[in-house]
Length: 88
Image 1 (cartoon, helix red, strand yellow):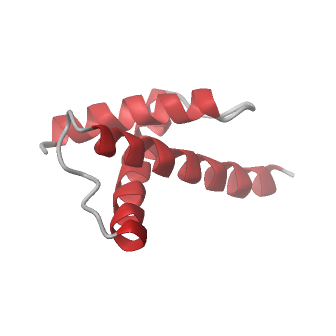
Image 2 (image 1 turned 90 degrees about the vertical axis):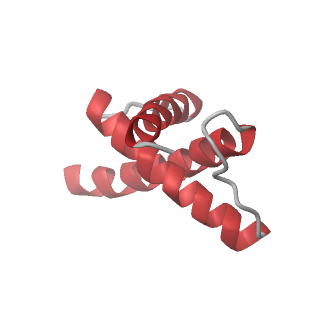
Image 3 (image 1 turned 135 degrees about the horizontal axis):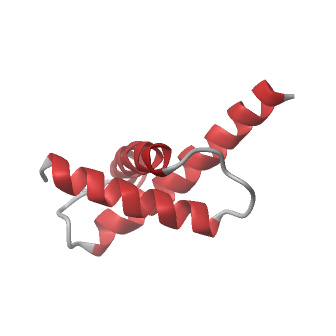
């Protein structure tokens, strides 16, 4: 996949992750995109390690989007955990 596809998947997966997880989130579009891209990479890696499948097949494959959203939720929860501690 090209860089434009990674950015688009990151933006959408990050937005879906923010919509799924309740609570207030700091950051705007750029932070959402970074969370989504990192989450997509994490989700793809976890899919390969845990299930032994290549979960990042292509832009239009369902497994790519599921891996990106699940990974984004994990990254978002970790971000909230780290950012929440630094504010208090």
